Amino acid sequence: MTFGAAGGQDMGSPSPTPAVEPMVLVAIALGGGLGALARFGIGVCWPVPPGRFPWSTFMINVFGCFLIGILMFLITEVWVAHRLLRPFLGIGVLGGFTTFSTYCLEIRRLLESGDTAVALGYLGGTVVAALAAVLLGMAAARKVTG
Image (tube, rainbow, N blue to C red; front, top):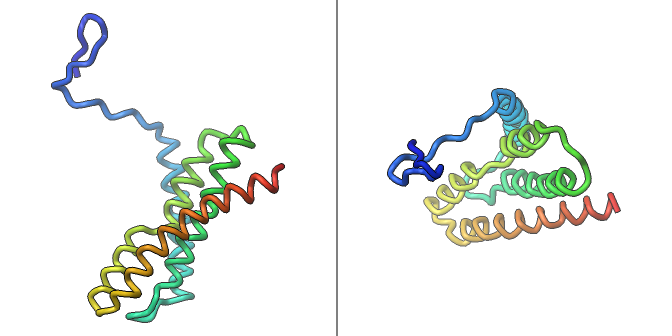
């Protein structure tokens, strides 16, 4: 990257990658591992039969979004959070717990098995329920904290 005399960036150069503190990466990795283990455990305890609505993944994603709503409200409006709390819990634990890839795979499997109505219901229902869960989590946290 080059800079002109006035400090402007040369538009022909690629933008720099921001430096990430090693401890932030460690927090995300540890949290992600914990979240993924929790998701895996729920999937083992509540397997989805082929061609059926994937309730376990649906509930994982909706509950995870509810917790994200609570967390984001608390760390932005209530607490003075430690700098590693959001990477650990938000990106790590809850990012590892919720799963967009499994959601997409299950939609594909439902479509391939001919369950188009279930696939479309799952596709739209998850998005609506997840967004509502974030808002509900934020509202619940706001109500509890006054």
